Amino acid sequence: MKLLGIETSCDETAAAVVADGTNLLSNVISSQYAIHAPYGGVVPELASREHLRAIVPVVRAAVAKAGLEYRDLDAVAVTRGPGLIGALLVGVTYAKGLAAALDVPLIGVNHIEGHIHSVVLERRAEGSDVEFPAVALVVSGGHSHMFLVKRPAEDTYSYSLLGRTRDDAAGEAYDKVAKLLGFGYPGGPVLDRLAPYGNPSNVRLPAVRMKGNDLDMSFSGLKTAVRRFVERSGLASEIKARRRLMASGQPSFEALQASAGTLCLDLIASFQHRVVRELSRRVTLAARDREFSSIIVAGGVAANRGLRKAFESSPIPCHFPTLALSTDNAAMIAAAAHPRLVRAQFDAFDLSADPSLRLA
Ligand code: KG4
Ligand code: ZN
Figure 1 (cartoon, rainbow, N blue to C red):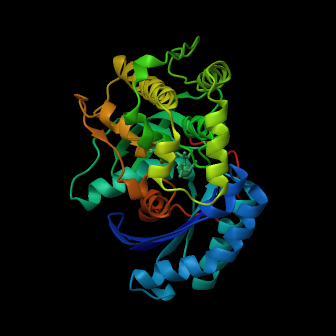
Figure 2: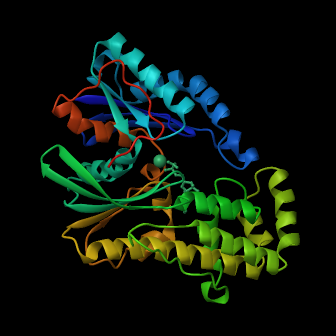
């Protein structure tokens, strides 16, 4: 069974074909990175316009790269939320039109469920599987959620929310700190690459303390602590120079590294250390009172090397997606829809986009 997945919830227009929930036949991603970078974040109107421009060629490329024709598709799956409403609408509307034209079922998918299934897809493609129940940490620019995921029967998944961020998402914190330090957008990848060059013990940032549900997370205090440190520490001229460097084009990683003094590198290392600790500590706490057989870490921040390292010594099997499937893609949307195709759980053509869709 061949499923076409479509993803347009934020700033990537993506389409992919997955066969039988295990075989990734194509995975096409058109990133809007260069369009939003000058603004230091995603501009919703520009995102919708770019999706509109890219959706037809991206889907066409995904079908062609899979070696298929449109008529070979058995269903069309699309992200229906959460995300930017204008961006989601482009994907949902196109998917509805395509499914109607091909006379195949339509399946609306939750983007967060998609991130979890990026891992399930890759394990199955290797001939193995994720062990359930699993604790899933989904960390990206838009969300930081932890779920308990169960699979009571083949192709049946259930999700319960264990904790979520009370303020910023983890990726959002990376992006805001990178912007503050003059590193442009998105900030996660560059801060992650720079972190090993600093010494985290040289800059003390406060540990996050949560009251109430201790599985909830918080990142805005950390971001404020970084801002205060920058104000006190005389980094302003370095940051100004880096902003000029960024404005002059797309500087290489080596040029960015050379622009960062020891204190700035120590600050980045300390920030990364705190975020990684915060995330790994929540998973450890979740493990304390619950029975589960594996850990899934997914979403853009799952690309983080520090986070991957922190889970390396986990006594419980811990699954990360490959880097290609960590950030937004449509393979994960097709993979999450596969169980619904098997169980013939389809959506009607009045399916609507929901910018604040919840998984649990
Ligand atoms: O999942 P994703 O592509 O889009 C959303 O659904 O938000 O995640 C993008 C986010 C951005 O905030 C980006 O800075 C962050 O993931 N990110 C990283 C890394 N790579 C991407 N954060 C930390 N370390 C990384 N290596
Ligand atoms: Zn995402």
